[in-house]
Length: 127
Image 1 (spheres, rainbow, N blue to C red):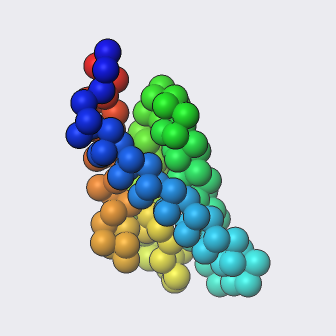
Image 2 (cartoon, rainbow, N blue to C red):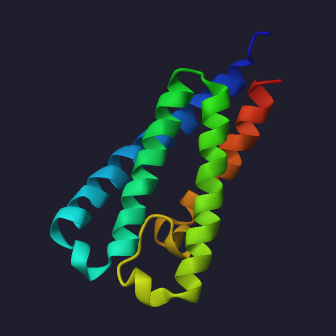
């Protein structure tokens, strides 16, 4: 089945956003782990995990491995919901916010909206 042109444009946008998050979250987490790990080990470890998830999601989307992309985006959404809830319940673990803490408020809630939008797009293109 041939994809619509608008679906391809949306897909490229999703891939670009994931690539930006993969790069920025991974670099930020590496810096945090190297320089400030003792300040907030849970938050910085979760930042690294989020960066790795963004990398896997980006690669899966680029390779059009929609099954892996779907699994990764579901894992990401669950992670954002769990870490967001945990950061509200135990804010002392998140002295310095991670990408997913507080549901991504410091990133304009993009970490919460991105997997939802990505899953919606995947559902459209994999019919």
